[in-house]
Image 1 (spheres, one colour):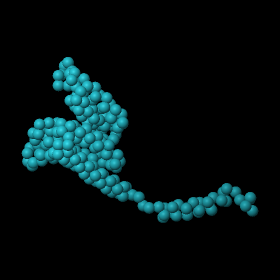
Image 2 (tube, helix red, strand yellow):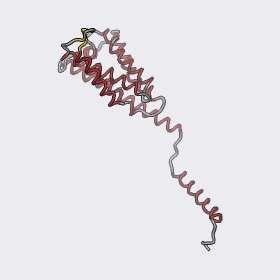
Image 3 (tube, rainbow, N blue to C red):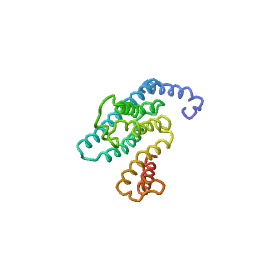
Image 4 (spheres, rainbow, N blue to C red):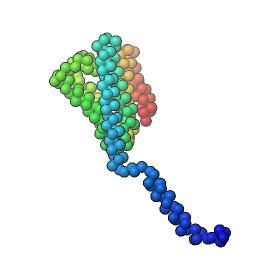
Length: 220
């Protein structure tokens, strides 16, 4: 009897079983809507922003404390903040969601620091620890030059390039690691100056290229 059944005679039975299977799978699987996905991405980005903000604040506070206690010198503290802040900010990008708004959440971190630099740079509020840890001569107005340009570059790279282009992370790697290490190495071993710029040394310039290149490759 079963041998005489043709594929056509099995079709209604197979269709009925398939229909029941689909209903069972649909009823047992959790509902997942675009609204729920957007809400999850929003919570992820908000949490990532809060975590990176807290980390950035603790990083600068740590160097402020070390500088005030004279554990490290002011110039070294300034350059260590210069090196670590941008690199840690860039390496935190993967913890943000894949939504289009993620880059805007990430840019809030340097934006908050930008506002902080403007407030203290204009002497609207005192913060001697911050001034000592990120300026050359301890002048509040210095916050409105190099440090301010620094955070503006962070904002620009996160908004324009984000994780879609290697240009952003390469720029940050050269600015943070390359320029930061160049100053440290140049001050220690830079006795031979460049012929066209006596304020720069061969050791510092070579160090910038090597360390900037290696960190860029690692990030890419």
